[in-house]
Length: 324
Image (cartoon, rainbow, N blue to C red; front, side, top):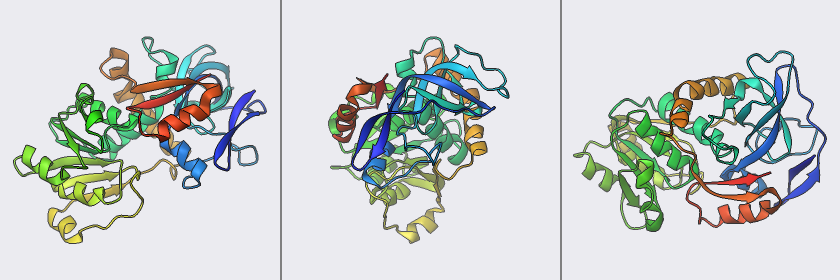
């Protein structure tokens, strides 16, 4: 079967062995797979995902959508032919074995290409907002880096979960002009505006209740400055760098809780717990159409390098998908 294997500086199209599922796995025939920044970072050597089989080739990809082809003996409630999606490493292949606990059913109204853009954003956004951020109805949410796929979905999910004002940042004024449809009420161009100044101006000096940081670098400290006394900053991504200088006096004065989060160090049980919460609290919104897959562009699987170049070039507004 076809797949993409991680090499030095690029992917290699390769023939891969068929997956060997365990009793609690299903085999998914992949129709589409989502491309993420972590996939680019893995090629550059700054990120390494968990390999499904460390003894085999390092197959790229972290999320997929497709149809169940085989069901393990210990798998309840899943049938051959079910349309599913999942956040799972090794997704860039024609067939993938997936722990059934990670499966998310694809709602009938969602096609599989769009569904491939959902697993990572659903898992990441819900975990950051609800589990780590303790989001409450009416909260002001600040999203540092709102124009990525996960940023756009986090904005929409925040509104769906009952947030009041959602504020988002970007380095592109052109992109910010297009994010209102995703639930962003105020956009901040960080090349020309200070995050804390704008957030405080829109909250009568109080600040955001929950800040989700997809950027890192110098912007993290400004995010803390924009967060209310007793608020929470959830550090998710580090597109601007993994080092930051923080004003610890401000952090202490505002009594802000700074929480780091990742899926890389979580156990399969912890992954499954997040998937369960997503099925309960997020999928109904997708099924109703209140939440949508933030797909910018889909590429054929044999044009994976073009998809990678497009995402690297910063032109995208939302997710990039590979269609098999």
